[in-house]
Length: 380
Ligand SMILES: [Zn+2]
Image (cartoon, rainbow, N blue to C red; front, side, top):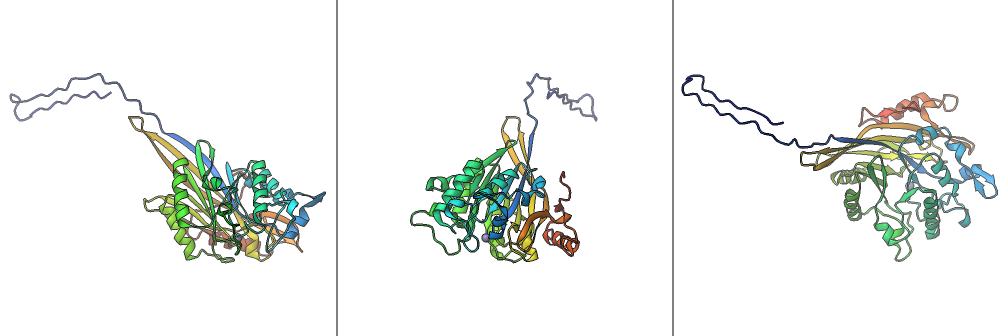
């Protein structure tokens, strides 16, 4: 390596020509490792909001419930990602404290079972219903998520836990998950138990993002806020998304509005790109206006590249690629026969003007991201 001979000659006058010959030297070649590339897929769904008719239908006797049939048609799409995250809007405080519906929800434990069954790995618990049934429901739910091996975020059972950043690692890529809500419907945490639920507080979010940066490659921020039933994001969502982009967050998942809101890339102050969905909508609920019956599964490819310089120093870069969306539709008749369906498969018999509606949803969701891909195949 590095063998060169430099010959300088003056062409004009051979007699005066000077020659500088650098002797070949034996130099040990530096070992430069090839770049390492790792990839993973992340998918996200919105609100799991279990109204009474849904758990009544799921009742199988003996204080037990099964939600599997409701998820059967979206399961192939849910289970294909390496990591799937959902918003557990109605807490799974379980049967022991009595189930309840709007306005203060409490859902059966088996809602957790079905999420496990379809491949959900992480649930956000920070939302306006976290305190609906008090501390006991939070303790029961966190216990059950632990039992299932599902990572919960946005609620904690101790001050110590609230300080921790929860992470998951797949294919050498470490993801951290953060979750916060705008409020809890006027309900207050018990005295001295602020850790029970994470509220949106810019200072706390900044501190947590800093900690997440130290322990992970990809930061996924869940924010429960926005105008209910509005199909577009509001200024506060844009402001906090920009702030998070400036702080280096990679993915922002908003939920709360119960209807879908568009996806968009935000550019952070170092030129970094942050992928944002302004609302994931309802994934399963009994809300019955058409846009409230439409939700989505978002899927993203994550790529991590480690490069080495000659000294063996490493440089890690991450990219979010190929955003894809599977719009979904919650079908039911007379508060019965609940099923989550891929919207592209819904027929005109199931829903009049389904095709026009699907096309309109695609246009609406991709208005800022023209290459947003719509999933219309279980294998792609
Ligand atoms: Zn909400």
